[in-house]
Amino acid sequence: MKKSLPIVLFFHSATIGLYAQQTVHKNNYTFEIQNTEGDLNKDQLKDKIVIEMDVKDETRPLRVQIFLSQPDKKLQLAVSSTQLIESEYPIDKKENIMVILSRCLSLRKAT
Image (cartoon, rainbow, N blue to C red; front, top):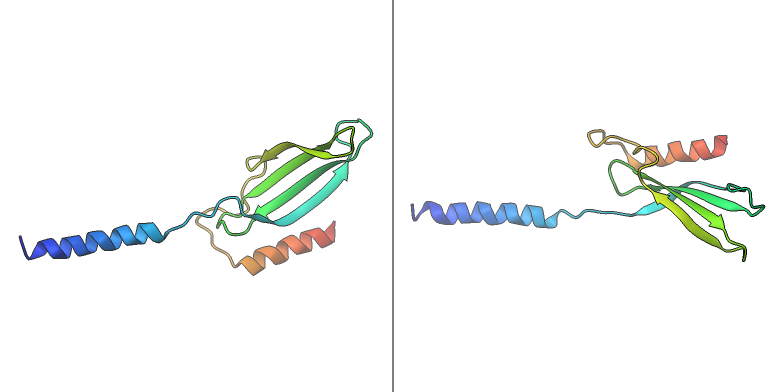
């Protein structure tokens, strides 16, 4: 029993170290997919919709932000959601980031 205790403690500390090194990257929406302006609420002022992708997250979640123009011509964030558009890829599918970015760029060029 005394001989196995150091071995158990070693493996236990190794597993704690593995969990401690895992970091969760959240809210890294750095890749802009689309940026569109138009009058959303019929007030004769240009509003803005921005769609961004989090390229650090494996699922490539998308964030939609809607900015409404105020009478002083400044944009105010009205809605920001990561639930409006489903993630680009399911968690079990892994793909090269360059392939993903090239697809997004080809979509931008097509529109």
